Amino acid sequence: MPELAEVEFFRKQWDAGLGQKVERVELHAAKRIFRGTDTKALKSGLKGPRLLGSRAHGKRMLFRFSSAGWLGIHLGMSGRLRVERPGYVPSRHDHLVLFQRKQILVLSDPRLFGRVHFHRGKSTPWWWNDAAPAIASKEFTAERVASFMRRRSRLAVKSALLDQQMFPGVGNWMADEILWRARIDPRRLCASLKPKEIRTLWRSAQLVCEVAVGSIGASGGDPPAKWLFHQRWKSKGNCPRDGELLEKAAIGGRTTRWCAACQH
DNA sequence: CGAGATGTTCGGCT
DNA sequence: AAGCCGAACATCTC
Image (tube, rainbow, N blue to C red; front, side):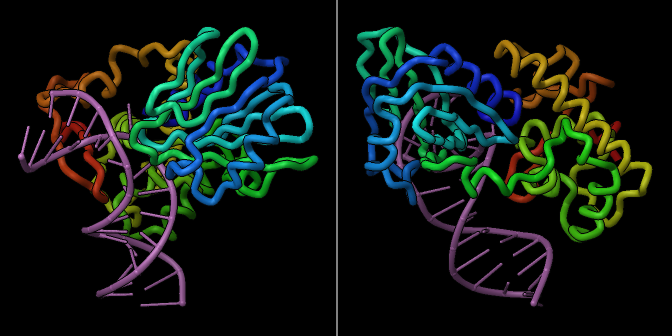
């Protein structure tokens, strides 16, 4: 599930534990999500400290703990964060569980494509600091997008939108949503985009992110009814704009939906 | 039972 | 040689 807006939603789930101590940590150390991570340090570093705050950037989250502990989480394809009541017994896919007195913070991830990092130190860790400018930020300019498109000239624009170094937080459904809104055919090569189209794409990216975070990110609800989002999962979805049957194809290995009638 | 799923990474090819 | 493609990862659901 997790793209920008869903990540924001999941991050807030753990707000329930803000300011409170972690009394016990349970984790499945051998699981893939902990690859490259010192799970012993994670376990001992989080037991005792309080959860002080969190941030999200693109698809990454960073949770800050007292005693200089930093927990980084990427939800991959099927990761989720949630809160359980005291007494909850973790199940098979609950790979990281932080027990607090009033509630239990749970990270579950059946497919294990997610990733967990742990770091101790005064400042934010290296794996957090290399993030590209957020789409919602002033630094995300049309000019940046234009030069990126020039560099990726022979790449399909759909694939370009999935590049986290340029569009942090954009995933498969958001990329399709952005292209649909900008009326651009996802198969077009980046080099073929005219300056005006790049500008439209840039504005669509900003709008889709803003509205998605305001709906899904804020409450876990749905984006506006007229969005492609509601049609793209159906086998026979229709374009919300003109009612035409949507196209479906794999572009860059990812299922892509678009309207041949209004995206050129 | 096979196919596909909202992500990233790696190895190989051009 | 940078950049692109497809496969692999692990599990569940349709």
